[in-house]
Structure formats: C-alpha cells, structure tokens
Length: 264
Ligand SMILES: [Zn+2]
Ligand SMILES: [Zn+2]
Image (tube, rainbow, N blue to C red; front, side, top):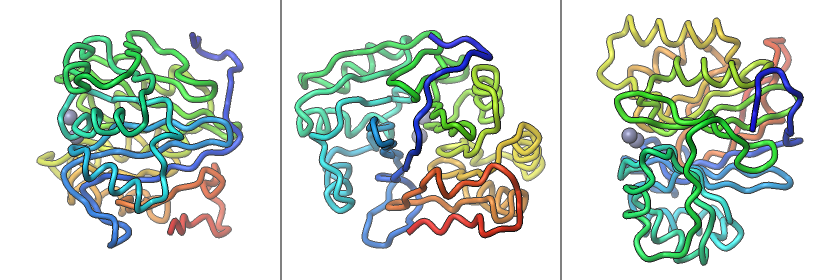
C-alpha cells in the first residue's frame, strides 16, 4: 500500500503504446471510439483497458507486434464498453490474466469477461498493481474510475481511461499519492462538450500542478486537443493509434533542448 511521501518502487523506464483510440497516429492502425494502451517497462507489462471490440484489439496488437501471451496484468479503468469490450477476447488469447478494476464495477467487468479465465483484483484504496505501477484507488464521480500511476525516478506518468471524475481531480489524487512532477498525463480527459473556458481552466490547472506533457486523447474531444496544444505548446502530444511514447523522451524541465516527443 502507498502512503504519501514514502520512497517507493519505481520503474527505470517505460514505453506506452496506443493500441486502440479515437485518434489515428499511424494510418495502418485503425481507430474507433475506444481506448487501450500497453504500458511496458523493462520488468513489467500491463495492458491498460481493452478497447471496444475484441477483434479490433487483437488485430491492432498483431499490427503492433504485441503478443497477448506476454501480458499477465490488465488494468481496467472503469466498466464502460469502450474500455472493456475487448476484455473477453484478450483473456482468451492470453490464456488468462490478473484483472484490476474499481471495486464498485467488479460485477459488471466480470460479466464482460464472461467465461474466460482471469483473477479479479478489485481496487478500493490506492495500491501497487505491480512494482512501480500503481492505482490511484477508486475515485468517486459520475462513473467511479481509477487511474494508473507509473513511477519513474524523474516523476510520474498518469494514465486515464475516460476521466469521468474529472481530469483535474484525478491529477490531484495522483499528486497526493506521489511526490515529484507529473511527467505526462495521457488518456481520455472527457472534455467533449465542455466550453472553451472550462477546458482552458482545466489545462491551466494541470500546468499549475506541474504536469509537464499532456496527451489528451480518446474522449477528450477536438476542442480540448486544440486548447491543450495551445496551452502546452511543444509539450502537447497528439496521441493516437500506434503511437509509442517513451518516458526517456520526456524531460522534466522545460529547457530549450530538443524535448520534442517524436514518437513514431
Ligand atoms: Zn467511460
Ligand atoms: Zn471512454
């Protein structure tokens, strides 16, 4: 279990590969209303959400050279179909896995997983999922959700599904749990339909909380992408299917050296 201020496990490096998303980065990797990414460190591999459709998830994994059998841990942000739709197909292809999910959505997630083999890992309070990769714990909101925190020696990476409780609230949770800058906030920020004013306020709150890079994708909306691009400048990442983001490319300070994330 985590407690604020303690020195805790971290991973030496991490790369995040976007498997399913609303936005396209590599043309040959199809997009749709969904989110899934693979979080890989030298010692750990965790699948974050499973997209909306098993066939698409497995096909995109194949195109990205990701073998489901190499993945033994799944992190489900919340129970919505665009994050759990590929779970059963993945578990069948992988031959089972530990599935971490908000405790309040355990039944719904288990129903989605069907007859496939898996070990349910309900999450209430913040905890380590694997060494260096943790959960914020269930965050209350219109739909309860938990977010992933990847701890690096230089700071944290926060990965969100839809951010139904609010992206600002999620980052606040992460900051209470871990010290140091948030090198990157990535995932669905759920700002579609929000006013320019409220999106700008959210972007500025994240900047004020030492979020260095922002990669709003999935349900974030086109307007949010535009405003975050304005506010974060070169520290905005236009994430999409097939993009690989390496932590080693993210610089904690805003120096003028080439910190551009030229993810392929
Ligand atoms: Zn959702
Ligand atoms: Zn979603």
